[in-house]
Image (tube, rainbow, N blue to C red; front, side, top):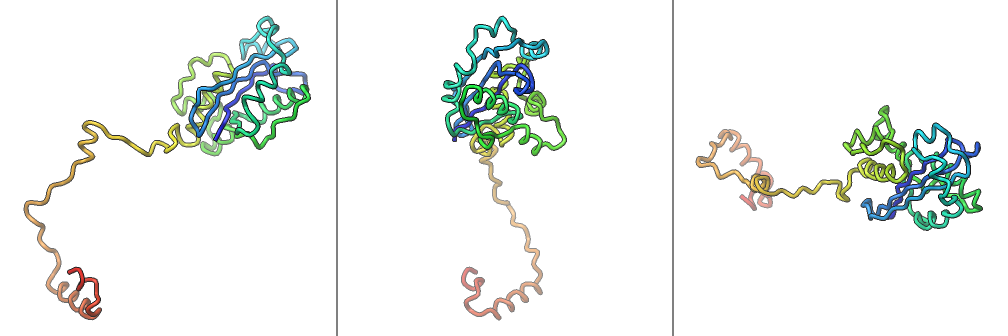
Length: 229
């Protein structure tokens, strides 16, 4: 099963107000394991970068001016995500809104909403009432996000991939249920109690023994006690 963990960075919150994508990052998982393949692209938004967006992303007009426009990278992006891989996105509605706006402006078909798994929704179902931000989930799972001083699409995708694998049960396909013991642990696992030097005395009374014998006799010769003693 192929999955693409994806993140975008934008100039604002609404494509209907002229805001655009400035960065896309994605990493590939196959059967819930990272393959090492990734996609990363800065995008010229064809508009000035608002101050508040610059403070969040650290991407300025001078840096983005010579980057390709979305229409120029759309084919490579669509080729990386493929036609049917599941997209794993934190707050999927937001990223799909921007991706589909950009695809529409490039005269390309939109990405169906049912292709996406929203990790915000996953986290809220698993931890109701708890913060579901990427930083909060990294803290919960002990994932190092110290390099996240600015929002970056590729770094956020890599962190989200780790969070997603924890949300669905851990990195290993067997969910960590198989434990291999070594050294002292293996020796302890192989330990068996020795036979008792003196058998414990029977706690069955004579009356109980006679009652059981009468019960077995009433069952006939086919009774299991007669076959196995």
